[in-house]
Image (cartoon, rainbow, N blue to C red; front, top):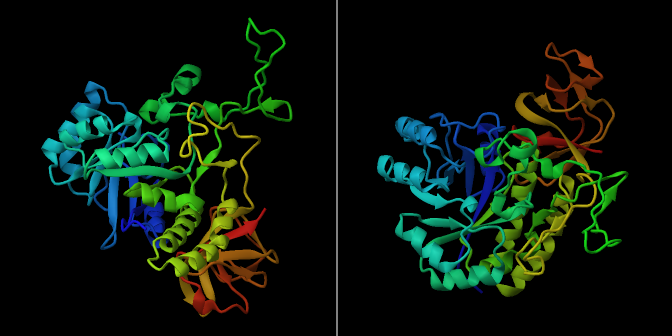
Length: 411
């Protein structure tokens, strides 16, 4: 068994999600640096000096869009502000931007973004010579590719995506959004036209009557929309291949998504890294409930992507819409009195329904006998979306419940 201990790296679309990522088991988290991020729609991404991280955790700032001259000028101007945030590394694909960061902030490491489509050991060594400490490989790399690169590229760190949305383009180099809606995905403004539903018939001229197969949902098809990546049952292969960082995609997803996916991969990775072989097998088997949890967040059909080579020159189209068994209902806030907590509703919560609370170390608590109060502590029948209410959690052991727990309900 490999002695390598890879980090678990989780997404953070804003400061609140950043805290969730750390609380639910991430060793490191990444957040976009506005206005240079590839996820401009993530509210709250910034170079804000108030962003913090716990002791022993790491924070990476993503500046991975394609840069024009005016962007480089702005980056030079913002460098002192970036230096006030406790970044351990910057994720960057543009070499001009990398040079600015290396010169202005030499104590912060550089990680090469997957947007650079680095796929071979010679390229890895070349980027290392330019000052990059870590390479985030293109998502088209197989496990065999990773192993060969690690064998030939020396001590440079390798990071790969293990979970989340995939793209029909090569490592995100897509022009569909720019062509169809004048908003560039390579500048952080993607409208995701690959997820749109299309109705069409495809027939090649020299092959009359031979139609391209695609899957339909009603009268429409999502032939450009890939399945989601899920490698939770294959972490041992990635550890053995020498991967240094296991990355979860999803800066635009909810804090519930970040919590559930991070927690699931945390438990499985810890099980895989158990040094005792027999105990390891038992721990991995016990992680079945965490594997099943990945069905409880919004996702498309799962795939292992390109890791095993069978889909090396293509991708797996998703059949149908997003799948989820649960809806994110709210966030548990401060304790007001014994058993009573402030709750920030993200969706309506109705008296009498069964809700579930999840926490970093509490798998799930099902409750149906809760009481809802308004801010004046008058009882009411419903907590409305985007409102603050108070919930008394019935006869459950409220000592288990803490601020930061998340509330969900079955769909």
